[in-house]
Image 1 (tube, rainbow, N blue to C red):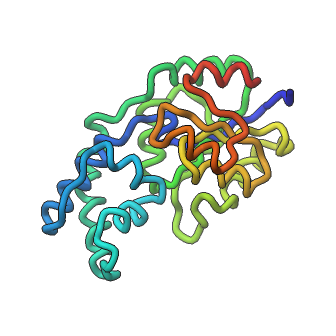
Image 2 (tube, rainbow, N blue to C red):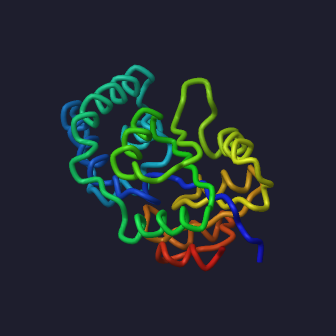
Length: 216
């Protein structure tokens, strides 16, 4: 088996359980705008495409651009107050990251969450981890599953593609890895199920963070 020397992580649903803060914030938005709210667990199928994707997935299918923009703006305002209320690392993640650092594995994060929030969350929960790069959604830069940011990160790591793993919890992450030409790990503690991860071609699927160490 290839000895991997670099790992790129997704953030939401992979390192951090953010679903309650996202769901409760969007429900507040929907209530304010007069739309039906969703159960928190339903949001697991609505996230993954950044704030815009979330808004589109929560609004009626015929929502116009003005409504989408208004929803994003209001969500940003409410989420800014709530994003640290219940968000926390998944069990075993801190131990995994510590061990990966001990093994001199290069680490990075590639998220579709707005770059500012991505960095704030990483600084809050993983300040001791020396990530090579932490990258969220940036204006003018293609989001996952476009491989642009992933290839950018690999270039900064200075290692060959066959030495890099992309770890995430949704089809977006698996497609990103496929588009970048690298191996992927689908995690089952996040927002999607084994069926989705298999369907989109995850190289490996794991049930617990410590299983990732066996792949190295």
